[in-house]
Image 1 (cartoon, each protein chain N blue to C red):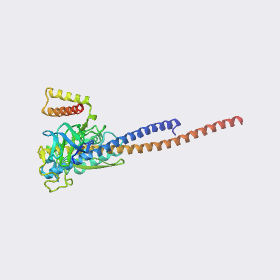
Image 2: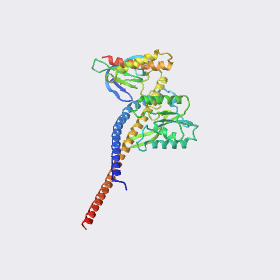
Image 3: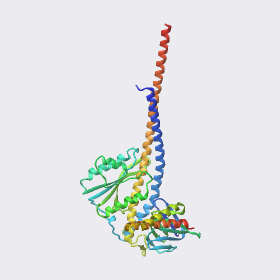
Image 4: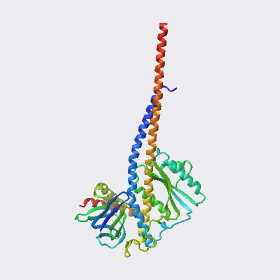
Length: 294
Length: 135
């Protein structure tokens, strides 16, 4: 039987924990709002970039390595996005499980399967399983910056151009809503422009016949494709960050609720115990008095 | 209709405002675009973009880094990696960046890649400074 003092200290610690979890929840809610805004702001940029690429590629008959579709990839690079911090429910374990499944399924069908890990969590998970990524990127703690994404993109593009990989996939938590996230795998390279271009087969499209390109279409598309890739990576990272805050918000909310329930239960036990000890003391006093009178 | 759109990954700076004229730092030097310009697609370099709203006389300046421009009969679309207006620029920081870039350019043992990098850095810093000091 725990003493009154033990129970009181347990109530106190639970209350402190509850304060922390509810504060974390509020912080995540604020960060989530900002991350969501980020995604919304990015959309027009990403959309017009992709449309222009598709239009130029189609109308100018540009061939580029990043656009060449490959139905039978042999060497594949996975970019796995997790978070640097925990306390966000199943956010990171879902990613880790998904990646493990990919690894188990595809290991034998591909000649080469490599990983780049973004975020500390997934790296630590696989470090325990003796698997090291070819690169590891951290620093998602603060607001995610476009520069960080562009840095990752440049390195991946270099690998791809050097012919080290036929395909680049990204695994991340897609942001559905504040309370739901889905782990998805998306192919980022080669870039798929089908379904974007509304002028398929048309040699002019929305461009006038005498459209001037400075520099040449080949050079322009080279730059555009690289930027597009960077934007896609930035989008995936932003979605992942938004999902992380969403996941943390929900998990902290349920922690706060659980703490509340625990406090209620402990308080009831505490009161019962207090009542019991008072009753016991009363009995002792009255029996003592009875004995003296007797 | 001669409208200007400036879009960056973080925001929409100008959304379809009617223009009198636009100056952009294009691939082959500065372009002055007036209504009725020939259709063109070009990349932009680091520099100062200026635009004059319809019916006004003063220009607004924006410091931009890499981007591209698309001129259509309806107007000008600009996608820039960054676009900063006067109010967003920290002059002290830009001056400092300019100084570091210049120092690094003249430091012994710079590689060609570094020179390229610092040139861009210097141009960005110069663009920011000139946006602030103008007007």
